[in-house]
Image (cartoon, rainbow, N blue to C red; front, top):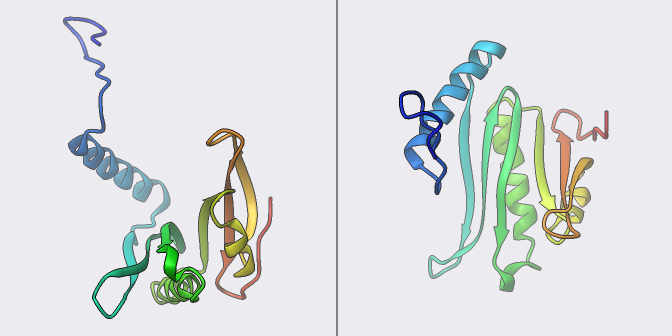
Length: 152
């Protein structure tokens, strides 16, 4: 789609990795200028079995004293073995080591919000209707005292 043959061009298409990288770079610069927080990082935690196969894993980011859990998954045959808790505890310890004092995560209602609540996370909000009649549940935990912070 073109807005003007002599001016800027607006294009819609599939995800553009180069564009995504540029947007990330620009937003990091803007956010750093706006907040002074430049301590961005990422980390992962994983569990493998004796054969080297993935049992489960967690991916997270850190910035400005906050740890954001992006992904946490444990394979079906290992979900009752405590690996989810082990991954979460290891991530919280790493977040503390990196200077974070709080953690945020979201989980759809058909996934595991109850799991996070059992680990001291408090619901701070929901995005309704995604997908269908489900919701995306936003959760938060303070790492300083283990205290929860609810809706503000």
